Length: 101
Image (cartoon, rainbow, N blue to C red; front, top):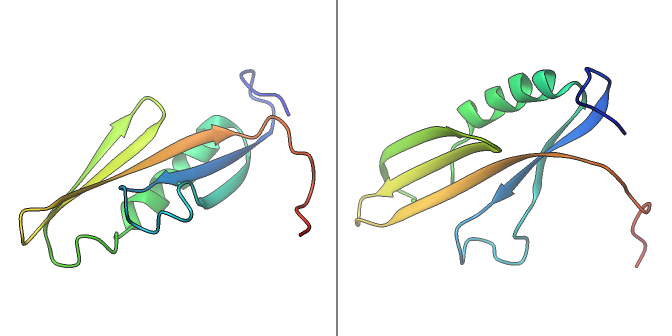
């Protein structure tokens, strides 16, 4: 899968959650797009805009930041706690195949 020159690639939006928030799955796949990076950024951006984290459970403030590799959503809770969710735009370069247990 190649990109950089407008060719199609598989793009994956991964979520890095705060420590302790469903720690069993530290980088869940949130969405995938087959297309250019620009198409992926546009579609993932809409996903991130609509995302509402489960923590803090009583948010008093939510902020979204654009980063070089995706977005950060930071939630300030009623108790003063802060939860940062980092959305990473990644390009799938190689996959060994399906997982079988």
